[in-house]
Length: 573
Image (cartoon, rainbow, N blue to C red):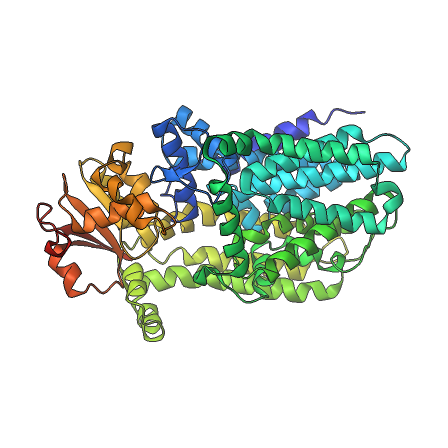
């Protein structure tokens, strides 16, 4: 068989060109990106690699594997945005190679090529590989575990023992748990059960192999939770699971969205794979054999993830991102059938393709106009009364309006491809739509996102970096942020002081040490200057105004300085 190494070399080279350049071009976004990067920084500063921390206090929302990866990159490349995002960039390069390899094994070389194009050439998958959030690596581990279950079924059908594949399925499931938590087991387990119901004879491969997978998963996950359990007892895990319940119940108000939220997110942000996948999501269009089995796994994965995160009240864009794998598989399948004359793409697909292209293109056109055009700003201000919105739009304006040409160009190119998709010599191949979206994704990453970072938090990050050079206390009031920690590079000493004796007074608070510190900075005599950050829409009362003076407006934020650090609140004496 001809070596496929040159193809992997090309994919790797293209992945490096797409994901690595200008990776640290703009600041990390608050919350998630800064959250994880700060946890990695604190690991290095505190030399505590066993426990995830924020503000040098235990942070139970996430397991440590992704944070370990970021900490390793920071150890090599320094504490910066590039190092924080590097694990996902490497993950992107590896994922594209893996998709080609899996596609070739499942069907053939061209399937692998189209799968790589469908995944890399869809909007969100490309952009998220240039981010610093957990989900790309979490999804990859789940995806590999599901593939190993598929291989186990294949081997069982051929009367071979799939022991190694079941072991690998458990191992990668354990890595997924170490990355983001036990929801990985829920998803993998439900996918396996769905196949068990459909094809019990070949999916169930014996109690020994099943136990081996469970043992491997537990063994990998125990590398973290057993030492933690021994050192600190069960309280950490109680808080961890309580937080997961909070997310399920939707008790974080601004995370709550309607049930159809993820349907729209996937349709628009996984375009064009999402549109090309539509004919395959409700029935198995493959005829028989390996293709049909794998498509069944992908269909189960898609619907299980979509249903779970549509039921859960807390909804964030990347919660449904595991669906990108099945959508890109089915999207590639449609293009492959077109390429090999094995099927005809339904004409009706052009309708959602046109609508999504128009919406995305208009968004890319309107955003620059909003920031650069006074008439658009006036119209927006008449509809939105939030004072923060006006500050974001009018301050730190990095936009000049010419960026709208990207949106216009996208609409023209996408519509040209869609209307030209015909089965004759003069028609364009639908795969060109992936190329159009890939060019748009590169433009968004290189132009839109850095400018959005400046508009949303440019002054905020800049002021925090200035305070990094000073020996001061910095904290936030009235909202949650992690940028104050990462960009002021506060050391562990700033989180250890006389307020620790007051921790018992805040034992009912989720973070008693952090709350005691904030109480100290706001009310008691301190050893160095105190700066407080609030949202721009925060309205200070007479008590706050008596203690703090405004230093600077920072777009959506305001920086305050305590007037007299030697004067405690007399009511607390």
